[in-house]
Length: 235
Ligand code: 9D3
Image (cartoon, rainbow, N blue to C red; front, side):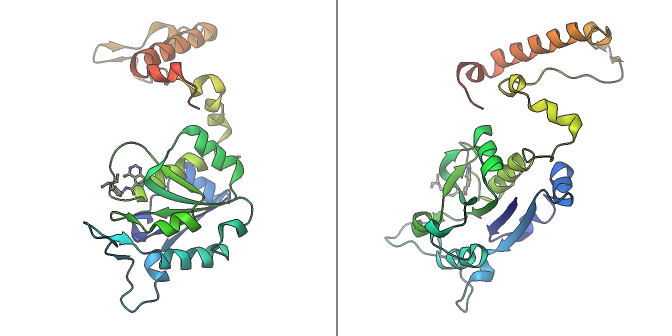
């Protein structure tokens, strides 16, 4: 998969993709990530990426020209109907559909080329949405200063779902039972830490009992902290 990120703050991404699973996926050429500075696609002498809103009001709006230029350069066309199959142009915005594991999985399964547009300021000229964007995504109901953190979250969630991105040790975590539940509690050495003991069953060596205990604890935690996960199908 190729992931291209359009941002006015390219330095934001200088090291975030250089660790853990994402780093490994890059090295294994499971994913290629490119960061593009929107400003480098401006053609006016002041390299303006934003301007005052028509109709008045506070704040600035991201201009559409540099974004159209970028998409034309990156995809080869700025007609949505002419995008190659598997191309998705995603606008990260508070107005988007809320990111869920099911959306990350859909992108991981279907997208070959993802272009992520990070908004800033009060918003982005609507013509970007009208002509270029195939998907508008929010990462949740809280206010960020821009789309960059959201692009990082989306990228991380997708890459770990790509075939062979996870080591064989960890891929089992993805099974259908655990996905709609919170995790069970984990313990490691030491057995006794400041008088706090590790549950006896985990030391028993009885794998059937351990499995039963873990499922029970996962269900209890979910019931208490995330009842909504048990009510609805979320994954
Ligand atoms: C005044 C109304 N606000 C819109 C709800 C203005 C506004 C707030 C935050 C405009 C842009 C932003 C910047 N946020 C994002 O670009 C963003 C975001 C977010 O704020 N929350 C959750 N997901 C996302 S994805 C992109």
